[in-house]
Length: 299
Ligand code: A2P
Image (cartoon, rainbow, N blue to C red; front, side):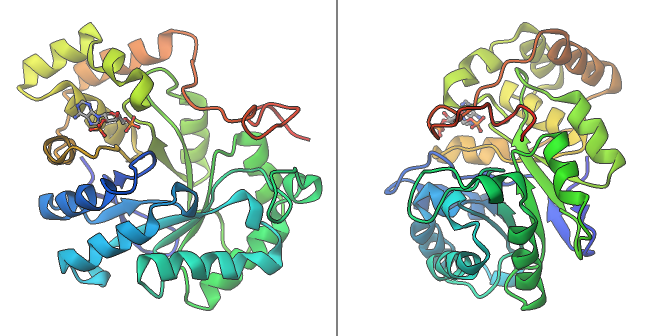
């Protein structure tokens, strides 16, 4: 299995990352330290997770040199106005105790007005002004790669129809057994956009069900690995970055070890995952008070 993927910039992004969404203050730091001890080099965070400073402190405590790490963060919805982007990024850099990010991502294809949760319709319909500012951050050396998150195909096209200086290097989306998004995966490969799988185990609500799937258990038994390792390996074998979240040191260690699944077993799992109607684990449209579904076409 690939240990890294090469982005358009030439940078090599590690295939397995520790995800820190829903890792609360007081527990995220020890999870990051456990991950770095286990050999992880890639931490996927966000300003919105409200735990960046503790992540930064854990990185510092680990003594791992900055240049060996891959740090990703995300621009929150309320900072899409071009004049707000750089200060939002600076806040993240300050939290993490670094002067550059390896990857900075637009967290949602949804812009809020400053300091509010009211939709900014113009910047939601057209993210190009926000993107141009991210391109400027690349040129300034504050970020090495830029990407998007939670963009469906029409929204990606809506962005890439503009004369971009840098194409989105990645699109971070929900990918798991329940919502495997095979069309988006194929389309993204054709267009040179690497997908990153969040909630790869089904997030806390569905992880138990995922790990109990008979085929997953059977493959785990056959290969002598754990059900979580089967699922995480399946993601990498599909050609995505995978971001399992855990704050349990033994699971953090377990999740880092991926194994190539024999073709026939990979196909069994892929077929089973894509045979049922897709069921999303994450959709904050209501929480964001949107009158439309984020994953529907918009505008
Ligand atoms: P915890 O953080 O308490 O260890 P996802 O990555 O899909 O968002 O899933 C995260 C959820 O899965 C968390 O509840 C996490 O629990 C749990 N989890 C992570 N790794 C494993 C594992 N190897 N075995 C069982 N549960 C796991």
